[in-house]
Length: 113
Image (tube, rainbow, N blue to C red; front, side, top):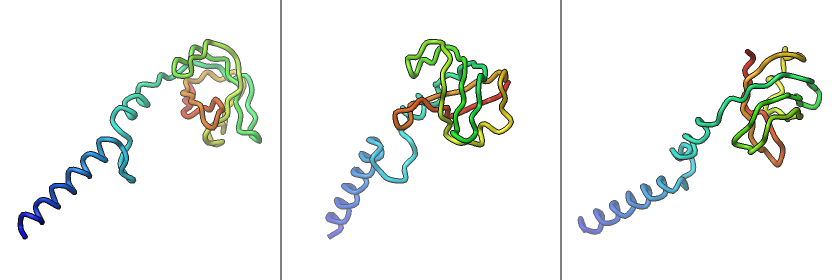
């Protein structure tokens, strides 16, 4: 009986460790590789060209965005939170991160300089 309990517990512990290593356990933190890549995303320099609070949109003249394979240009971005646009005005210099969210280029972090 002790051998059966020990084997069952060992199997359960192995399964949990394997699932955690694969990132398949609900409630688990982001896998280390994904967390490292998110932290490695650069802050990109930009200048605000337009702010549309109603649409949650900011137009930025920006530098190279390596994670989106996007060269420097001027374009509009959605923002993950409209509060990011509070107090932002044309001409402000910013540093930002952008990702593709639901197929749209979206600012996920924004810092005024």
